[in-house]
Image 1 (tube, rainbow, N blue to C red):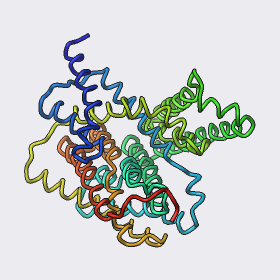
Image 2 (image 1 turned 180 degrees about the horizontal axis):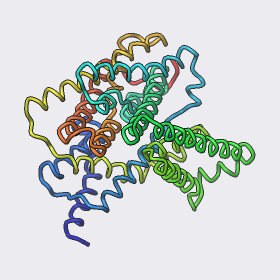
Image 3 (image 1 turned 90 degrees about the vertical axis):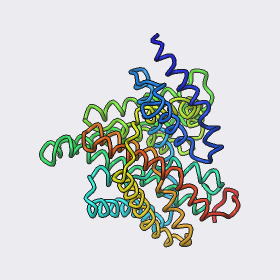
Image 4 (image 1 turned 45 degrees about the horizontal axis):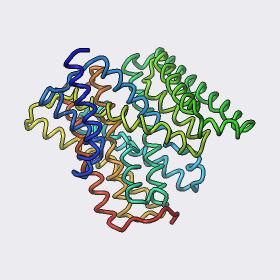
Length: 390
């Protein structure tokens, strides 16, 4: 094995071990700490960890697993339990976020992919902060989590549709690809119905495979569906992340209590594969020259991200949430670390943005990932509460 690759692997695995401790000391999200670790040891500064096909594979695998786990967090059954007013709010807030993001981007002549990054919503940091404060199961926590969930799905959908437009234009091929996308959702729906039928007819037999089984059939089925739908998405020129996300959604819908399967997958996922993805993002990142133009762009993106999230979040007050908590919800939704990084990498891969703009978006993800939870905690200084509806 190449000496440089061995050194890279040792430093990478050391980062996976050390990042959680360093992040907790600095009071920043672990994913942010992993990206920063990669930046320090990668192309931007020390050049100690080098890119390789092997690390590329692990990073891409980790990213697919990350999106699958994100899909598992989509609790459609919980949305059904909301009142009509709450349902409308949960769905309308993410739509309004993108409307505001596109208006903001158009006003400042930002590229469409950048506007998508400004409007992107992800539940990763949202869930982490809500769990830390012990309010995930409260009325406020549920509404905020479900709003983020719908926002994450909408973000992936918008990103997918835009990538199709970029690749094939807005002509006949576009509508063919949309038809294929509908077929993709249909196949996913069929798989959902089959699994539901199996659960209906053989509940005990199926359930045991997702609990204790020496061959880990549950984990195998989960990953098999993730890879199958990701591959199917690739065949129709749709980003494979959508396939992984949909696969996670299928499981969260068929098995409302996904704690067992999440527990089985989280060890290797959050313990190794997902950290590899975040560290590798930092490794590939090349710190641009800090100048006035970059600072202005970064400031503009940061302001746009907060405006796009906070203004629509004020609508949460119609569900009984007070104004202060609605504003704090907007701050927390402004930390879509994963999807901003994904959007930046996609934009660069499709030559929609240059290195300068890609760097600004990744720095945006890091900045909002650090300060958004801080603002949320400042606005929610009350003590942790036990899981209960209020």
